[in-house]
Length: 110
Image 1 (cartoon, rainbow, N blue to C red):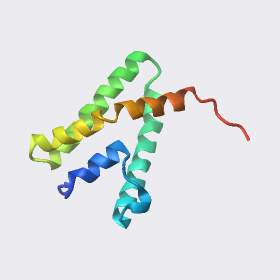
Image 2: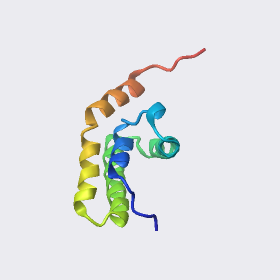
Image 3: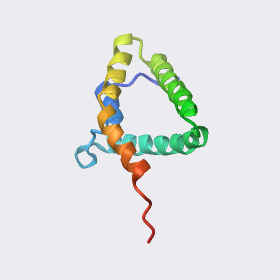
Image 4: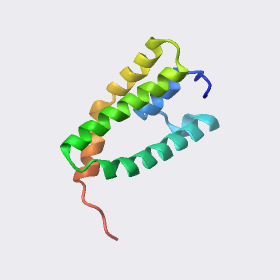
């Protein structure tokens, strides 16, 4: 079992993408790299599961459930889980912009 995170703020920052690598400790930079790797791996697999609108809704619901389940294994206080979920919800506008760019930007061929 993983140990309890020391600072929830850091994990909230990973969710929101508000960590600036140049101003972060070596450990934080490694956490950022690991988070990006995990995100890349998950996206690679999720894309194969989301052919239809219904697939996207089902997959999204399952991923949210898994994330909350994982947090409940290391965070004893529900308020801590809610804090992280709230941090994620605050990123919806910037995630929407990011997804629109990724979906609607044609690939560049060199």
